[in-house]
Amino acid sequence: RANYDVARGVDDVGRWHSGVLEQSWRLGGASAAELAAAEAFREDPALRVVQASTVEVYGPFGELPRDARIHYQGVDPRIGPLTKYSLLEDYADA
Image 1 (tube, helix red, strand yellow):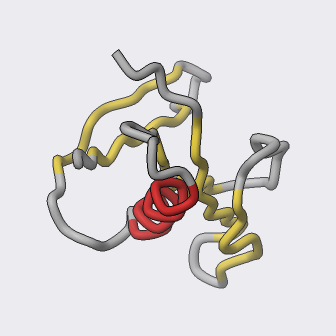
Image 2: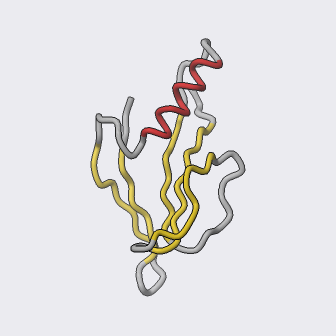
Image 3: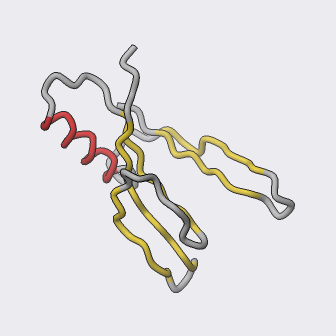
């Protein structure tokens, strides 16, 4: 299991920036992804590898990936519009 926190966003002149914030080996913000992965392994015992993500989107609600599992979508009184979802994606098992 590997868990990396990645931040992505646009600066005030429209340029994209991203970076890895930390590597984590604990339960926490990624728990929704961990649960989605555990469910996938339970449903398919032959499965060897999955890629699961927990995503937080700050700002106006946009179109989400088709298979996103929304855990929260609303307006936080301190930070404004917020969407939290998890996603289980196909992973090429090398």
